[in-house]
Image 1: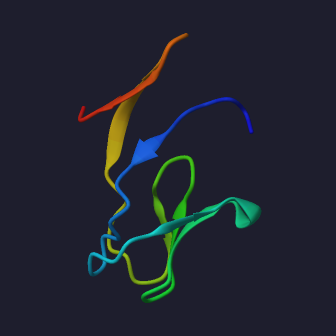
Image 2 (image 1 turned 120 degrees about the vertical axis):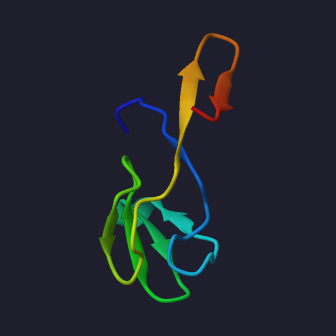
Amino acid sequence: KDDTWVAMSAVCTHLGCTVQFQPDQDRIYCACHGGVYDMKTGVNVSGPPPKPLKLFKTAVNEEAVVVSRG
């Protein structure tokens, strides 16, 4: 919504399930055990996840969005 780009792992830090972005609820959600993460920071907000999602470095230019381990 604010034209910023964020890239993070799609692997839940609880038991390794795949998380889903839910833009209508402004969150990242893990259906396995109800874990919720902040969509901008990857911080674990509620549920059993013990730590945030891993963030990646993003760079946006006129031609591409580049995601790398950082």
